[in-house]
Length: 96
Image 1 (cartoon, rainbow, N blue to C red):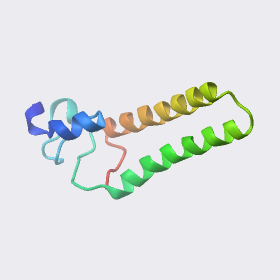
Image 2: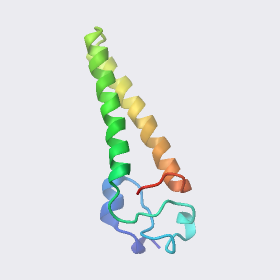
Image 3: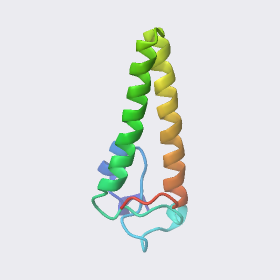
């Protein structure tokens, strides 16, 4: 089953997605399909990263301990990524 999908892409991104809707079988039945380039999705992810980066900078400007500010930003970004991965697995997050 896993051989149908690009191992390199899944390994880099942390989630395996079927390359087409027709290939969405087994545990990938409901997953979003990876249909090539996805600049809109990429921009949404970059927006998440930039939002947390900005929150980190603001926290530092307000005098927060850098380690605490970093932990908060990383925790928030991790939560957003976890939600995004779940949406991809459920097939409700569009890549294109």
